[in-house]
Length: 113
Length: 114
Image (cartoon, rainbow over all chains, first blue to last red; front, side, top):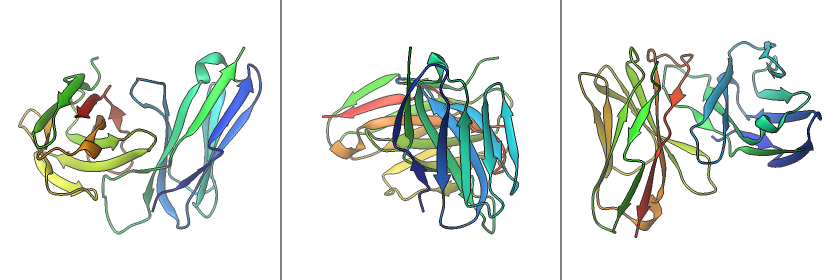
């Protein structure tokens, strides 16, 4: 089942913060975050595996809640280069290694000067 | 280090024809994944190959098929093309075949079916 991302779109001014959520009705094995700029390949941002985990680099961080049903991506002091579509790719807690990421529908982020 | 490469960049076909898309993974990666990204939709998982074997496939008809070669490169074949097959086809590779391995994406092949 496809995870639900929210919001669908957000417009920011440079320096503002944003939060993108990725929710599932069932516990997830992992969450992978990607950013895709128009006409380009999705670029890997980070992966979360453990409930309660938080990680990040530079001004982009993410969390995975204890129940492993929601992950949030935090963009602080946004820059123009943050513009793009953000996808969460998830794998359900399952019996095996499926290699199959189920992606959310994406959140379009536009940062304006 | 070279990233994932895909060819061709663009492909135009007519209904009923066959399309072949190619992917070269990052050196040292043994797993290759194929995704379809139709306009306005997210990425839909198509196929996963690891060590030359098909490990998993998504909810796509059998006319979507592929293979992985001994050098780990892969090709995706789409037979009897339909208009709704028009999409960006993305290939990704990972170091191994575990769920936690990061999938690195190529730039994609834009397939247009007329």
